[in-house]
Structures are given as structure tokens and as C-alpha cells.
Image (cartoon, rainbow over all chains, first blue to last red; front, side, top):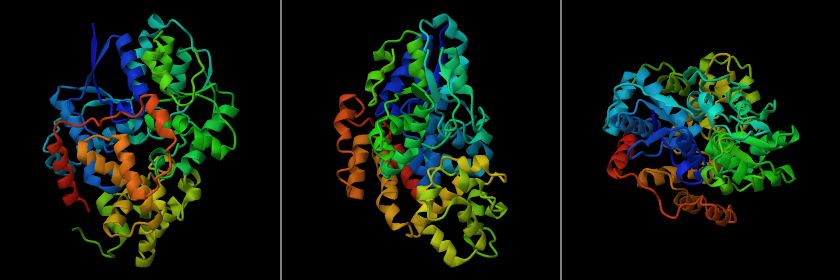
Length: 283
Length: 186
């Protein structure tokens, strides 16, 4: 029977990280999972709303949750780590604080009756993909990989209760089932510079530079990510990274869904690997 | 308004965020782990200490700092804090307060704050973030016209820059949310 899951793509997946969206959707299709997008979804406010306006930073995700509830969605996949962090945090805060919930509901003009289950991409893969993977696997991804979780995938830990806070293992385990050899390295949850990408790209060179360099030095052949912001900084910002590090770093950055897609025989068009700025020389 | 004997910024933070900066005993683990500490004028543990002083001049200095804008909310600090002090939440409040009082750091105002404004303007307009529009808006605000110019053709050829913005159908709802949020915010 076909499984059905709610889906919140978020803005990045419609723009600079189209390949993430393509690989998530193709992978779901390959595993007979129907993804139902939240009707008329809006931006979650990302890293900007909470910097300038508390109520706005809660109201934007609250509208998404309300739209999902209206559509009867009980469980939702949110592949972007920043979006999932915003949605999970907002839902938690609103159901913890009835007064705040009331204030936010008045702002959105929509009410929320019960929390829904919000899955990040790793939880989705663990639950829906890994059990079926042996039946769909046609290739092995026999490469040394550096699993880069970034900051938001495993945080805030108290609310998420997902994986270990530092030195997480979930992506590493998934990579092993795909035939890859994850390296041990200390930069798994170091910040790539996140939302400073446009306003302080010099800092991205430094922060992301250390991450890309460390992965390379430890012999990884690819960096595996699960967040469009991390991907943008490690891949698209490679020129500033190389400038800061004073050398040319060629290691490609792949979304975890692209790797599993390749293992399951999805085409480069389905996984979108041709869209990267740092060329992916892996078959 | 609740009772604030000292009328201090730390009490205001406590009231609005429920985070008690008095719990900080200056172990410095947050500053040691902060990826942006070396760029900051005051590191996270110093920010906590400045709040504890309840000194008006120091509080003003804090609101004018670049640190509060350089914080990327990566949450490394709270992950390592032995007192579980939610420093990112404090930073959020300090940023909001700083803009409200017109005290935002002059350097940050031209880049980091300008970016956040451009980002939110875009969402207010269409309900979604549309990168080409946002980048244009940001360039006008920051007056940094040449940065990233060489990246655009590469991104475009890989289908990473959509030509038209996607918009939420119920734009009025989004605009109402912005209007009401502005009224209700601090």
C-alpha cells in the first residue's frame, strides 16, 4: 500500500537547492511514498524573523502548521534543517505556553488543535527508507564520506530528542547501509556560518573553510549534508573557501538523499547532482 | 508589566524570554565553543556577565555591540552550557531590543541587519523567500553591488535562480501577520 506523508519543502528547495527537492521527491517515489505538500505554504521566517521580531518568528511557522492541520496532515517531512528547527521549536513553544499560543493564533487568524509529528530528513530515512533499502539497492556507494550534520539538525536537543548532541551517529549509520565508509572527524556539528552567507561571506570562507579542509585532510571523498544552507555554504561558497584556505579544495558536497538515490539506481537527473557548483565526480 | 525592582535589562530578558542570565557562573564553555567568538567584541559569556552587572552604561554598550548580530544561532553554546542557559534566545531578545531602541551596531546595520530586513521584506511581499529579489533588495540596502556578481550566471545555468517569484495565494493573510506582529512586538 502506498504510504502518504505531509511535505513542507520550504523556499530554498524551490530555488538554490532544487536538487535537494528533486532527490527527496524521486527517492520518495522510488519507495512508494506519496508526499503531500502543505497547501499554500509560506516561508518559515528562517534565520531572519527570530532576529528581528519574536511574534513574527512564531506566527510564520504557526501558519504553516495550521495549513497542514487543515489539510489533515498528521505527520510531515521537513527536509530543510533550518525549517524543521523553526517548525519544531515553534510547535513546542506554543503548546507549552497557552497565552503565547493564543497571541500567535490571533496574529495568524488560524488555530492549532494538536501537535503534529515533524520529521527531519534523517528521521524520514531511518523510518521509511532504511527498512526497505536492501530490496531497492542496486549499487554500493563505496566511498569514504564525512557526514556533516550542521548545527540545527540535532538541536535544540531538549525538544528534538534526536541523536547525540555532539558526535551524532544517525547519518553515519545510514551511510554505512549505503556501502560508504564514514570517517571519524570533529567538525560534524560545527557551524558553517549559516545565514551570514550573504551579509558576511568572508566569515563563510573561514567557518566553512575549516570544515571542508578538515574533511579533505582526513581522506573523505565526499561531504554528506542534510541542510540546504549547509550545502550552499560548502558548495556554492567554494570560491571564498578556497580563497581563505589558500588552496583549491575539490571535495564534492552531496545531500544524503542524493547518495541513497544513487544507491537505488536513480538517474543523475532524478538526483540533480549536475546542479552543484563543485563538480561531482562520483558514479 | 511585571515587577522589576532594578528595572534592568537582565530582568527584562527574564520577563520576555524566561531565561535567567544570573544563573551563569562564567565557566566560559560557551565562548570556548562558539564558532564566531573570535570575531566578536564581547563573547557569549561576557554578554551574560554584562547583563549581570545591571549597569545602564554597560547594558547600552551591549545593545550597541556587533556580537549580538554576529551570533548565528547555531546553538553550540546552549548545547554545552552546564546551566542550560538559552543564550541564543537572549541574543534574539537583545537584537530585537537593539533595533527597537535604534542602537544597532553601525557596521552590522549595513550588512547583517540589512540582510535580515531584505529577507523579511521579501516574505512580506510574496509570502516566500525569492532569492534574486532578495539579493537585489539587499544590494540596494548594503550598497555592496559587486559582491557575488560572478556567481549569478553559474547559479542561473544550473537552474538555481528561478526567473519568477513563487507567491503565496493568500497574500493578505501574510500581510496581516506582518502588520499584527509589528504592533505586538517589543
